[in-house]
Image (cartoon, rainbow, N blue to C red; front, side, top):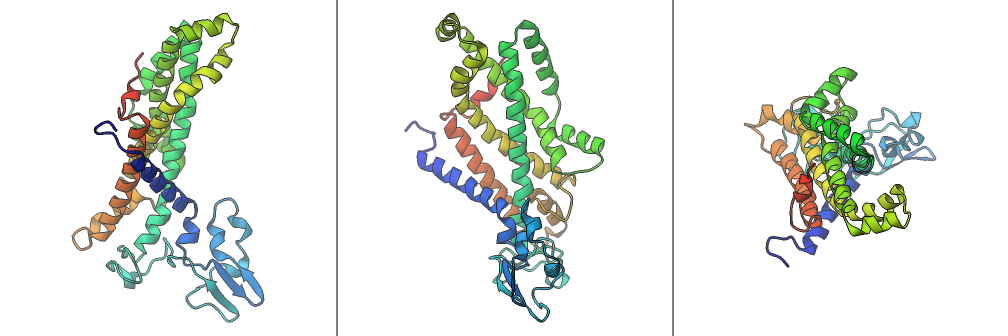
Length: 330
């Protein structure tokens, strides 16, 4: 194994860690919730926690389960199966403010008495949603425009090159803030769009550079001489060659998007409360930093673990060359 190159075991560990975090984000309402996973009301079984699931949650949002205090349920109702972390990310308990990590609150509580572990679990959802959404949108837009620049002729190439140069000058922070101001609200959508509007340029450069390199080779000339169309060449020959570099670029884009989302949330421009993100948890912990270390340390560790796993996966996918694929030039 070349010196300095991560091993295949590191690859599997990094991908497994990111997969676990993605699974936690998807199943967050079933892992951390003050409402039970299964309850009984009279002779009827209820699943109150499932009401917080996206898309299918409305099927379980029954009127008799709304607003029930499951610590002291009314007569005829009983919790049968509680979530592993039986706390809500939005439940304020001022009498339990800034409790250190212990048996009841494994990672402690924040200044409002909210369970920190529950908030970290639910905070994975906006952080990963922004990262994966921005990477997907950047790959789609950048791939299409890069292919048009490489295959569409001199005029299309010139126009897209100039567009890339202009877009590359803008900070994703400024783009996200401008979109939030234009739309009149903060949230996940403006952050995804702002980051994608910056990162698509790198994807376009990579795709265009690979197309131009292939067009000067014998394989391209022989395929064109045999009558192969440009779409066929792009799908059968270029796409397999670009799959590896684009996967590496996607990993680094997800990592950068998570950092940017956390930065915007730290500045107060993240997702709207009460839904937390790792950046907003860090921002809220500034006021209590001198008296409580846990609201700062645990979100920071979560960020480092996820970003580290993505960077390790990206480095291995690039064959140990790091971000060299990012530097495709015009």
